[in-house]
Each structure stands twice: as structure tokens, then as C-alpha cells.
Image 1 (cartoon, rainbow, N blue to C red):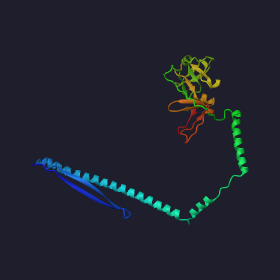
Image 2: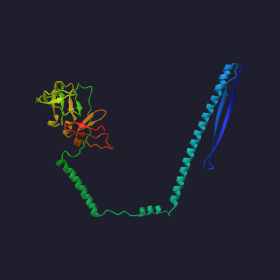
Image 3: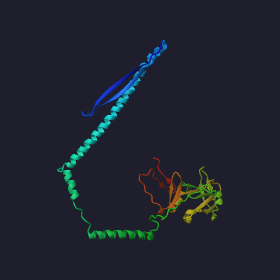
Image 4: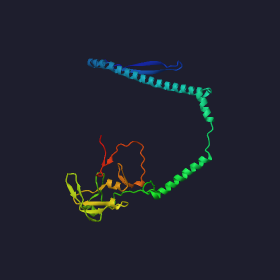
Length: 291
């Protein structure tokens, strides 16, 4: 028995009437149902007869969902257009109404003449401006460390990682002082000032004794802030953030690195509330609350 292809074309017309009778539109959706060819195989006919209705229902459901989406989009577009038209008409009516109290107040305020500043007040303002400029100029001599100054030219410092091997130290906010390993002191040619009597506690619960007192080769630090102690059993050197802060410096940590500046060269502006706020204890460590 030869097979036969049958194709059925269905057209669904859904008229939609919006709030205004002048706005009518309809959506056409077509669904094509293709029935499989008839065969002599009874098992195949039974299989097709069980799967064909499910396929038709799926097609009809998808087309119904598509129609509903189109109707929703057209309804939203119509409502937006109607709201815009209504707001425009309301604005035109309000502008044409010259008897409205609000319109009268606005027009009266526009016609009100603004008072001019008297010569006496102008003289006072000039005196205030001259006094402020004079105070700013004298602060540079009377209070040298209490104002912000900016460099006239930009200076960019770039660390060349391909240069000669450098001696690194870890910038540690938990260290109470500058602790330099004896190996790093020799590599950096740091001087030996005198024997050291410093003893510090280490992470394993024990203590370590310093060997020498030296000075960090960092310019713009005071002798007190540059003083460091060397240890023979320290694998890494530590530089204390607290000791640097005591020398009127500001350390800025980012995801890419860290930089240390003098306080008078830094102006930090915060746009939001801080994430953490901590205090510095009597040992020089910075502590923040967990809860």
C-alpha cells in the first residue's frame, strides 16, 4: 500500500479591541499539520497514531503562547502611547489656563526683581576673601605639617622587575618594629650601628634575639623611623606599617601593590561609608571588630 502525504493549513484570526473603539487589530497565526504517510505496517501505524495527537497539541500550544505574547506587546504599546498622549494634552491644558493659582505664583515669582548686593556687603566679601588667602599663605610657615600640598609636575615611579635582583621586605601591619634578616642586611649593604638587645616573640610561641641595630635605606624617613633590628633566624624581613605611620606617613594598599606617602602629600576623599573601622592598640597593632 503506497503512502500518501496530506497537509492541512489552519488559520486563526483573533480580533482584539482596546479601550478605544478606533483601535482594533487582529493577529493571524497559521499552523501546518503534516500527517505522516500511511503504510501497510500495522505497528508503525499504531506508533504514529499515538504520537501524532501529542505533536499537534504541542504545535497548537506553542502558537497559542506566541499569540498571547503578541497581544501583550501590542497592549503595552497601546497603553504607552495613550498615556503619553494624555500627559501631553494635560500639559497643554495647564499651560493655556492663565487663571490657575500655581500659574499665577510662578509668573509673579518670575517678575520679582532680585535685590542687588550693597557696596558695604561687597566690601565685606572682599575682606573675607583677602583674609582667607592670607591665612592660607601664613599656614605654610606657622604649621608646615598641617596642610595639603600638590606637586606641580607628575612623577611616575616604575619598578623594573627585569633589573638587578632586589632585596625585598614584607610590609607588615602586625609587626611592632622593623625586623631585617641578617642575610638581607648583608645583601643590601645596610650599616651596623651597634649591637642590639631586642627580643621579639615569634609565631611558634618562642622568642628570638636580635643581633645588630641598622638603618633602612629609605629616604625621607626620620632616623627614628628608619631604625631596624637584624635577626639571624628570620627567613624574611619585615617592615612595620605602624612605625611608618608614626613618622607621619600614609600607606595605601591596593590589589596591585602598596605605596607610602607623607601625610601632607595625600588627600583622600571617600564617597561611601567605610567597610571596616579599627583602632590601634598599645602594642602598635591595628585591630578591627569581627562582630
